[in-house]
Amino acid sequence: MNVQKTALYNYHKSLGAKFVSFAGYSMPIQYKEGIVKEHLSTRANAGFFDVSHMGQFFLEGDTSLTKALEKIIPADLNTLKLNHSKYSFLLNKDGGIIDDLIITRTQKGFSIILNASCKENDIKQISKFLDDTHKYFLKSDLSLIALQGPKAAEILEKLILGISNLKFMTGNNFTFEGTNLYITRSGYTGEDGFEISIPNNKVEKLIDLLIANKVKPVGLGARDTLRLEAGLCLYGHDLNEKINPVEANLKWAIAKKRKEEGGFNGWEKIKNLLTSGSQKIRVGILPEGKVIARENTKIFSPDNEEIGYVTSGTFGPSVNAPVAMGYVSPKFGEIGTIIKLEIRGKKYSGKVSKLPFYKKNYIK
Amino acid sequence: MSDKKYSKKHEWVSLEGEIATVGITKHATELLGDIVFVEVPEAGKTVEKENQAAVVESTKAASDVYSPITGEVIEGNKLIVDNPSSVNSDPEGTSWFFKIKIKDKNEFDLLMSKAEYEKYVEENPS
Image (tube, rainbow over all chains, first blue to last red; front, side, top):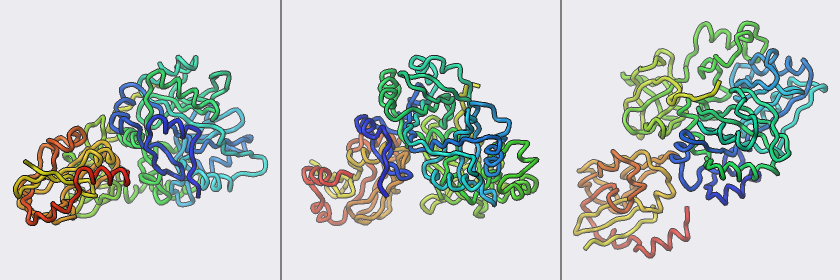
């Protein structure tokens, strides 16, 4: 398969990006300043991220479309208001997570932001529930730019009038350089911010203006440290088809009405788990000292019983300590529980921590 | 006067008498990115030529540091363990990894000179 490039590929090159292959795309992992500085400047000021590899998927149809999507997505789509967004997932028949996503109600139906590595399969799985009256398409003529950080609103307001009135997890149409853009107030860093869907032929102009306003480019490396500090899951690592939302500690993302009424893939299984509890649960982990517990690190109880595994782990620049997430048997899931982490054959102490590691700063 | 040589795995060795100081090169730190964890060998441990002797982790990944020479560890640099980012700022100075008492000076002589290493890096940028 050919490596794909986003519309900003050459722009990234000119900014001194180091590239890495990710989900079939050549994407910047970092720029000249490096992951730690990119991370810290996002938290202190603002950073932009090219996330155009993610799928911008649009669905059109009447109420039958809502019903169809509710069979695979456990959000309350029926009452989701125009321009409002929800974090949710696609579920398989066993309640396993096919992908996690953000779904927004649009004039003609819904738009969904899908993970790059999953988008093709996602569309296949969703389309199983659709009929001839429903239209669906992935827009590859659009780029997606995340602008994140405490100064994001102040800076973007200078370029796009009215943007600072958007509430968190809502979106709207705005005009930029005579072109219509759809912008949502959302993100995946634990900071206030926006996701800007913009035609490929206008994206360089937007980036020029962001850079002129001292916004730094941020690569996938810092995107990972930011989201992990914010306690957010990365699909393919913290989530996969064999993990269900109860285990992933994401049962809050299943709408109350849907938990009661069901009618979606895996509901029976999930209903049982909601009453009886799951065999494992996703937790935050703080290793003691400076040692980093990376993905697949085995987790042990203080009496050396193997109780789980790490799914994401790195150094958290804002926490200024190593941070990790993983799955443990629920009796070890209480915050503060002492655990052991096996790293390079040696056992290091750590404890179960609350999530997020870094306090969110969203505008509600 | 100490003599300094380089390995293909991007370690530097500076030799004074039979005591070799080992660290990672500036080029290695540029490849690694921000260094956030370091593990150095304890005094008394024997390290073998081209075997793993220390660990360095960046925000991206964990990497092994190899000893370019066989010998017995005299000291691991605790300063870089406490302050891993100092390896980024002064990799070929104060931020050495370990000192060893070497067994065979031939191993040192076979390593690359500065000019040879620079050429090697140019031909093998990553």
